[in-house]
Image (cartoon, rainbow, N blue to C red; front, side):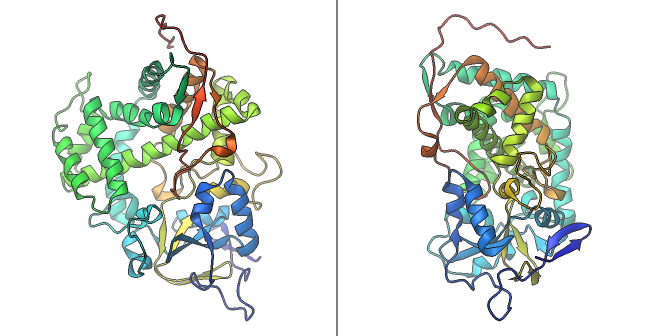
Length: 437
């Protein structure tokens, strides 16, 4: 494979999978291609990524739903270049050519991230509009105190564990992982529990339904009540700051910002925490690393992001003009999936060992470029605190075989459907308050 340099980043440009006449392959040329559901449903996505690389090189055509395809990019340096805007791509999904193709169901789960929107959203805009919509999120998240994050997360974790600790059985996804982001992020943004529940439920509906207007109206109303909300120190709550931020042209834009933040953050935290707990229950060596204190925990969390990435793909990009890549002709309107979940097995940067060829923070799970996660350190604090709190309180054991675990049909996040465990029930004696430095 030949290698080219794109603004200092090595990309690929070779005739790996052209036809016998040397013509580049177009997205809909192959009669059959691998379905993305093979990646989302398998216990080991690395096996599927390896097969796709062997068959197609670093850019493979995949099926999202019957009649709808996308290019799956698995090569580290090309993903970085694309995320940094060094290819003619946009995050604006209105330009996806798949909107013009008939398909059995417009509500197919795999197609929802490619749905067209009638209002600018931070994750689906570029340039100056994206910068304007991103500024309030960066500013608000940037002033949340780390100590407050850890304290709030620990308290919410203890409350959730209290709810099942005496039973000896639990589904950690349903009873711990799924509710935690709502409780923690809601409190950090300044919402009371009831309002936080409404906001997160609206965010889930917006992600699952074609019509986002009802969710936006509901959150706009909730934000209107937050414009005067104050923190104990007298300052505006983070939600209040978002509601009043001058970068937003309307309360509806602020509502879209809150919905984007809460939906993406909730799914990302759920996926990372669930993968961490799953590995701690199925891999004794990893469990030992996780229990090795703060430094050991952070190294273990980075290992999750490399070897069992909770993020399968970044937000989809759409080609705005034709270009050649890796023996493929990417045409304007084609969807590109930046498979950051594949970089842990990318032979161009990884060796035989789990850390060969890369630093601990180079995993791309938080994205790169202008659309990177605005607060990865907050996500790390929440996941680390949640994992440590659970294992301090309980010694759970998985109550199913590891190969029986199932993941949700989502090409962006690796979401466990359930994580049933058994453990020795706690006695009902009062629990001492944790020591906080």
